[in-house]
Amino acid sequence: MRIEIYDQSYNVHGEDEEHLKELAAYVDTKMREVAEATRMVDSLKVAVLAALNMADELFAMRQRQSEIEGPLRKRVEKCVAMVEKALEQSN
Image 1 (tube, helix red, strand yellow):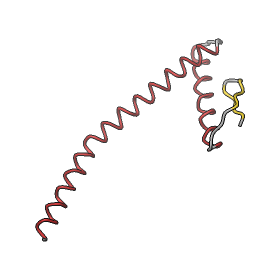
Image 2 (spheres, helix red, strand yellow; image 1 turned 180 degrees about the vertical axis):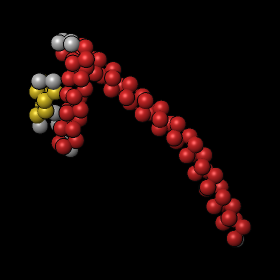
Image 3 (tube, helix red, strand yellow; image 1 turned 60 degrees about the vertical axis):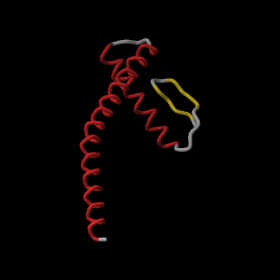
Image 4 (cartoon, one colour; image 1 turned 30 degrees about the vertical axis):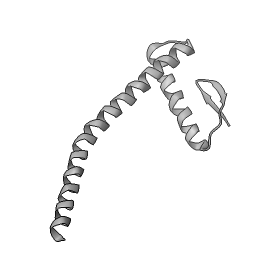
C-alpha cells in the first residue's frame, strides 16, 4: 500500500492497512508540528526532531505505566494470597 508522510510517498506492506494509515497520519502530524514550531525546512532534521518528540512521549507513557503497574501488581499479589489462604482454610 502507499502512504504519504510529510509530502513524501512510501510503499509499505502490512496486514492492517487502516492501522498503517493511522501511523502515517500520526508521524505526518508530528513532523508538521515540528516544522511549524521550528520554522525548519530540512525534512531530515524535521524527521529527527519529530522522532525525538515521539520517543519522549513513549518514555513518558512507559514511566506512567510502571508507576501504575507496581502498586497494581502488589494489590493483585495480595488478593491472590488472600484467595489461596481462603481456599486452604476451606479444605
